[in-house]
Image (cartoon, rainbow, N blue to C red; front, top):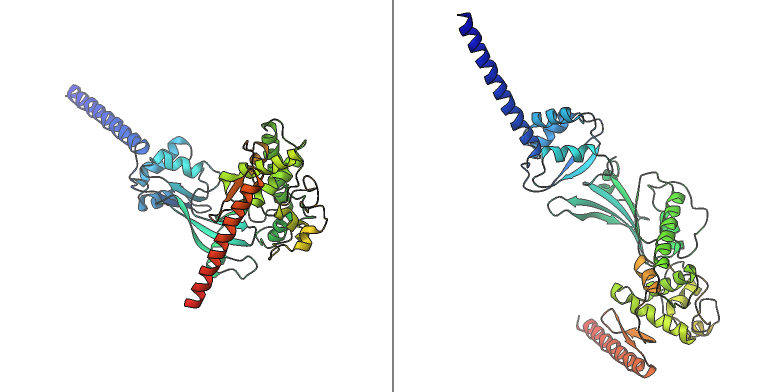
Length: 391
């Protein structure tokens, strides 16, 4: 009898072991295998949230198939107490292991809302954006002038500790514009002692935290521009008509202000480089305008003949060579164009009516392009007048 009992007990024990092993294998497969999500979602982890509450939220949102298995896996991997607050993008089919990795790896949130403080050539604006998980693209929620009262939707979002902040400089902004705009960024602190040298700020996007110091941000912009210039200077073409990176930066700023089309920047650079090599005056209007405005906003009108004749350090119709400083903060593509221009014989260019420019090697060909442009302007003017009369 005892032998039978022992035999049955052993059998039961073996069955239990087999079942436990099968359940463990199933649990591991559930934890590591593809998850149930059919499309991306944003998962928010609040400050101080427990693993239990987060796992239930994940199950409710369909990110995991079983909250208990998720908790057991987190405990087993030693990450149960490592949740990082924030909003995280969980892609389709993400396993529980991948979801746990996203929620415990730390770093910046990958989902949710962000504020982009954009400093543009003509104006600055504050944009509240939100990631659409279905498309993995940001959509604008609200935008407004930083000098105006903030909309209620923005004020509400700004109270969220998980909100991300970014400052973006457009290519071609001046240093004065950057400093003046940053004064309106009320999520930053501190002052900027003086306007940094023109051209010394890299037009890019900068991730910041609420309460970041304005002076430290300016320093980061300068450090990035120095690195970009150093990298591209080291890879420059041979035989360029300037001797220092600073001169290349001046050329890059002229290219930046002459065209907004990335594909023709190297052609524009070739025109001015060819002029320098031949001892021609650069005759670039943006430089003349900078001599008038000192980079403090747009001129808002056309240049006068008296201004084109007046001798100033930036009047490239009068002076020889480059102006003494950059006339804006050029982006990487314009710096690259100044240091690796196209090899052409172009000496002239003029607008072609499409947003780009028509290039020419001779004055005769250039004059023909100018005539075409003026005819287009006249036709456009007549069409605009006709439209007004018809309304």
